[in-house]
Amino acid sequence: MYGGLQDKCRTLRLAETAKELPRLLREAELKGWTYHELVHEILTYELDCREQKNIERLMKWADFPEQKTFESYDIREQNALGEKNLNVLKELNWVGEFFTLILMGPTGVGKTHLSIALGIHAISNGHQVSFVSMTHLIYILKTRDHLRKSETRYKRIVDSDLIIIDDVMYMTYDPQEAHLFFQFIYDMYDHAAFILTSNKGPNEWGKFLGDPTLTTAILDRLLHRSEIITFGEETDSIRMKYRKTLFTEPSVQP
Image (tube, rainbow, N blue to C red; front, side):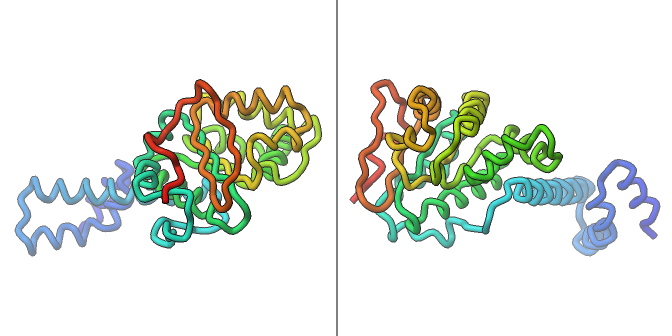
């Protein structure tokens, strides 16, 4: 009965509408929709389906190690962020301004959970996000010229609006790896926002990269627009004289 109309929908690349058209037309007859209401319902259905498919694709590309959302994030269990500053992060203005968030503290305090929750929230608001550990990022940078999988992953990372790098400076890197990391940060500066999680303060990163000059160049770019959020015990953080900040008050609240 509706086969001809469904074929026309498919020709127009309205695939989801083609599948649901019989149901939508029956509902229109039962509820007495006007032509305007019917067209509105059909187009809204197609757009909603496309948005959901886009989110599913972005979630796959993000490559999160697990699903962690704000629904399961108990802000009372940490002393790094108050409700007000968490809401600032949820607004996501800092993504478009290419800010760097450094989530710093010992293992198990919620750094990765918060980074993933922010990443999923960013995807739900239309941003492309990539999650990668620093160890795997270095591997991708070293192999992207001769491994198709690494090349594909690299392209998705550099096309992202938000790049989450987990476990930054977890281990010592050789000069080639340190240079590759610098080149990556250099290329992405002013092209993407970052979230970095680490159990080491930026003032310790030089020990892992082995080159103070290179470390300074990396930090100059990452910390130009940044917020350092300290979890767990109080830790000294780098204060840059001309650094722009995201919050209007200190990150840690009583």
